[in-house]
Image (cartoon, rainbow, N blue to C red; front, side, top):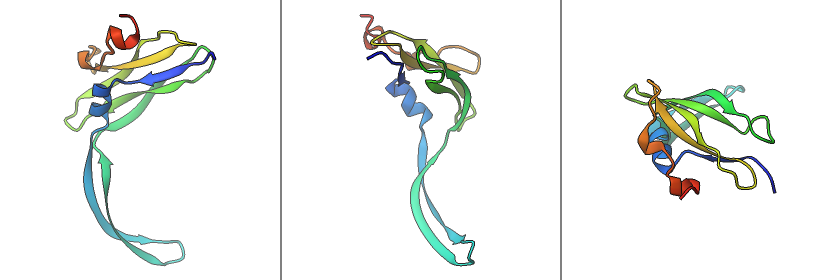
Length: 118
């Protein structure tokens, strides 16, 4: 079957851009009917700000996936780009990261072996 395949970021990059922190939230929610509900919950909150900066046009689909800019808690910025598009029944979009100066973040690159170029 021929199709566009979004592979995404490698494991190292995924871990960096999905940083979160577990927080406890305590408060009240006021519903439209005036009823007040209290809540006390614990859950993850993203520490990284994620913005859409473009998209990947595919061989068969107009829009395969969005490309993102990530602003980290320390202010550093990373942007996604398409590193490679090896074919296996269609293009397989492997994504990597560049820093705000446009330099490729080496750890975010897929290896030749992972890309099937070994």
